[in-house]
Image (cartoon, rainbow, N blue to C red; front, top):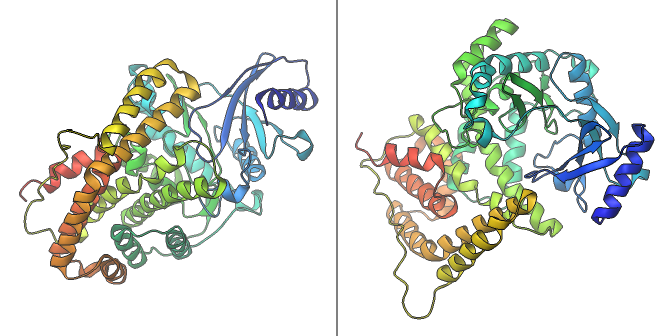
Length: 468
């Protein structure tokens, strides 16, 4: 659908469903949104948000989680949550087939900022962040207290064992091969917590899905992963490294430690959060995000979408390899010696330009001539393209050398990569110091190609290259 027809269809919907004469104004697609589209617009004096399935995608194609809730189901949950005191924007209208806009709904546009890169750096939000652990706990306590009987029947409900098994099956179906992921699946299987009475879980409660003003939290967004399950999963989810946005040492969303939030939650609910259960869900959520990265690449391949955003996310699996090893290190025997940091300097260019040089030149030109002069979503897409080219250039320059080193280490271990992966999955408690050393180096080599500025990589370098 072209932009003119899209705007006309949306205007017709607003006039019929919301009333008034408008006009429709400042229609703008919001940056990001790799699984769903979000649009901001005005209808008369009212600012609104449209949540919509991208054109050409079915619900299954757009889901990063096999049990994702439909957009209509999301609207139902948002309405129930609002009735129980959760800070959610009001649902104003739902899309119908005759609207010609696909599946989705329109909701009020709450005031505030959601971008973590802004919230964590702008001092104007300092007081809001200081009070956020308490509000974080209050919102989750309110969500978890909603009676399942008042919620949509389509809400998924699975035990921890079922969730681990389904996640691993999906990883295999997507071509997952990482021995570090295999190790984590084995660890999760042996650390399964006992089932609990299912409660409503938001499923994606983290920085990026919370709106803040300088006065504090103003709205909880993005309910597509809502489900019935273990409330501790919600408590752990926002603490995984990927949702710390560069502030690796600040476990809760990049701005605090979780202890204060958990203490508030325990006081509000009269429960005690078992820390072993919390750690299980922390490892699970970290691994879940790694599998979702592969899902993004798969969506791109199956739907032939333009642009490299989903493919770039697909390469973030290496960040999760770093995170998992840092999380599980206390359960693994330490390598016998500190890890030497890999060489990353590119060979001096001479003669016929290499592929890495060509990619680098194109990337630099895009950065200066396209991204530097673009704005809004076009600038975001240009930056994603530049990131993709950087990965390709590093892969061309360093990939063959790293592959040779990995094969040499496997020869020393006496296993090929498939045998090692199966052994780690079957017997995660039998990891040897030599295997642990290989896994560390493998994760670092992969991440140096994919995301050399990832905050977890700096933490790994400090811990793994220093004498114990």
